[in-house]
Image (tube, rainbow, N blue to C red):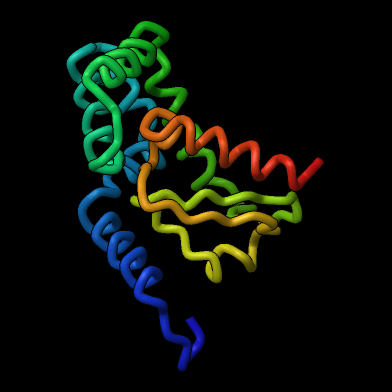
Length: 164
């Protein structure tokens, strides 16, 4: 960040949340980015392992006021386990970290819905992205489509009206 530039209170809170995540919640990313198939074998072998892996993400990344229940978590874990897609879902992380073109600047019109638990800071995102729509919400988390579906759908509609 350029010297003399100060963060707003909201930006500082997001940065603090990101730093806590990087120090205490980022291991899943490191495993998937370096050993996706090792993880995949474990997830494929154990439905309880798959449930624990998915359940932890829902617990940690959903906004506390969200509406994700045990049936949602079990359903998602079951889909991953029955389709044996634990390793293939982790493969994206590996491929992203082992390319020479990441991050790639994009001129594609981009909409951002920054839900309550998100860490996006617009001024940091703008240099690499053509942000044409940005919205801030005080509820919802990483799983906004499950947590706040009406808000999520309204946000999608709002953004896509701008790119017609």
